[in-house]
Image 1: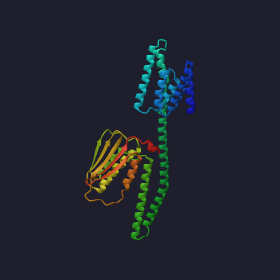
Image 2: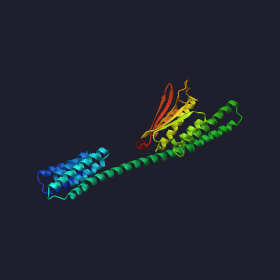
Image 3: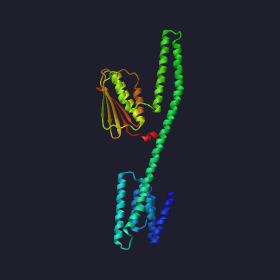
Length: 352
């Protein structure tokens, strides 16, 4: 039913009830105009229209269809506790006015009839509108989750295609390089061919790791940080782990994997650029986010640039894809890698 049809139906219904009650002339026309304006404003100003409908119902004793229509619109738009409080106060005032009118008019309806009118014409439409709004929000979130699953399936398909095609080619390059390495080549060329074979094998291994990360099956997460720290300590690094707040699992697998990569990158940089220095890993659980920090004393001599920061750039993108932030603080006394990861999935970004 179109908007204009709803306005016409409410105006006709309530005007007919008031006409049957004996109202005629300009008062009936003014009432029809007021009802039409109230219904027309219900879409953009639902609470104001609902309060106006309550006022008309008190003044005229009618406005039954108007109460149901505006009540549904108001319930559909309730989104905060303030809306609930204001609507409840308006309903309470309406009930009080009806009960006072019943007491002062001996020949009027019984109080329970007035209360039944309030429940049927106001409370039920409000609850129905709220229920419809909650169902629509639930469907929106469900569509977002379905879109995210479809995106992950497509990413997995692309990753599998990359693995099948590029992995095969890299394997051929490695095999051909190994065959050349055992052939009659000069020592310098044999050394170059050996480097080519090693590079092809490293590229294949990196491709395999990327595919596993895209699949999101058996990839390391936040729960594996302890094993990562244990391996670093076994390699000779001095690592201290500080935790604070109430530890909760990360609901998004991307965020859990990003947390692992942040700690891994921090430990790797510390061991590479400040060997032997103590490393502090901090995990701080906030009400809505996990703060991760990996800090170590700055090296006495500046380290030579080896990779151009490509690892940190990739890590920044990984953290951002999980809805988080990554910051690097290279101080004169301390190098600190800090990340913030949300505790719940970011649906708006996942669906985009």
